[in-house]
Amino acid sequence: MNYQETLDWLFAQLPMYQLQGAVAYKKDLTNTILLANHLGNPEKHIKTIHVAGTNGKGSTSSMLASVLQEAGYKVGLYTSPHLKDFRERIKINGIEISEEFVVDFVAQNKTFFEENDLSFFEMTVGLAFDYFVKEKIDVAIIETGMGGRLDSTNIIIPLVSVITNIGFDHTQFLGNTIEAIAFEKAGIIKPNVPVVIGEYTTETKTVFLDKAKECKSNIYFASDLIANDYSSDLLGDYQIHNKKTVVQTIEVLKSHFTISEENLKSGLLNVVKNTGLLGRWQQIHSNPKVICDTAHNSHGLKIVLNQVQKEKFDKLFFVLGVVNDKDLDSILPLFPKKANYFFCSPNISRGLPASILQQQAKDYGLLGKVCDSVSEAYKLALKESSANDFIYVGGSTFVVAEIL
Image 1 (cartoon, rainbow, N blue to C red):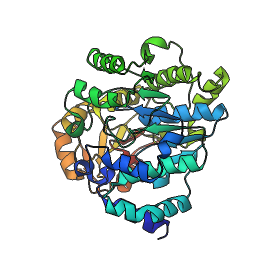
Image 2: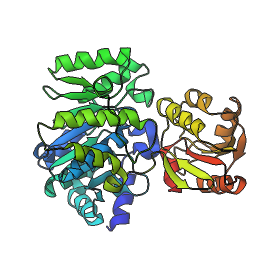
Image 3: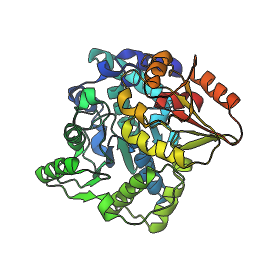
Image 4: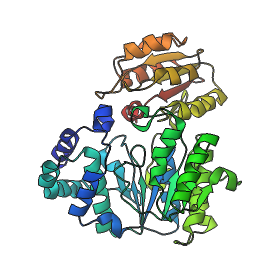
């Protein structure tokens, strides 16, 4: 199989959460452990940093990778989902895994995958660990897919575990209380491995402290410990929390790596250049200013929409699309009524039809047009806006992916 055929095969194998949602979730690590054994347990031969949390995982992981790269290390970065190409998920020093490695890995292990009914995510995690070992990296930043305790990445014993924050997302898998979700994320805390917490609430702090005590792990609450704010090329207001998380994590990592203050500063200033991170308060057009952002739940959107209101503009436009398992009652009230909306559906099977989104949005006083596609919605927004207006594109990672 060539690269495209290999991808088609990977995507078609077993349910993939990115496209199909609930049916893709496996509540068990058996397959991942089976695969790791088959591959010779690559996860035991690399140093890792494990990152979980409702929001900010991708930004935090990329910032950590950038700082370590600036310190001269060869850094693996595993994140999900991808925006444009599958290979974005697996990088070393910002360079994506080669098509050839992906093709060879699948060809060599295809029979094993099929015999054991491995999911897309399990195969991808195996691919990342195998690649990082073969490329002899110094350290890998591993972002969880969803949750933590039962996530396929949770077979590693990292140098440090990082939990960015807890909000309501994926409640059908992780539980519908903040404490239940925090318990799942806290599942990445390992015996005697330090843990850094980004943001916490009274409810989540108790969960984290209990788990850290059980594991005899030192626990650091970054928001209490870090006072300095550092400049970064990631300009979203929400990055202030992620930066504190990163600074505290780097402090913990100094017992394993040599990282100077200069490395920290330049790492935070060059995240996009060093890692290729996309879709975080990213400006893609001027006059009118267009910002796209992958925020897709109430916890993330609240901060982003607050930042939108700080912008100077004559008229405000939204290109908005979501997936069909989104709790619209938790996000639609956050959007401003005084704006023009272009409703669309991301081009995946989980995309919520734009007409349904329009109907529900109307209940919250959000009015606008239904568009046939994300690109049509974006073109219309550009056409109807003037130089002094502001356009926001988002609601889903997949909406952003289609206009980048």
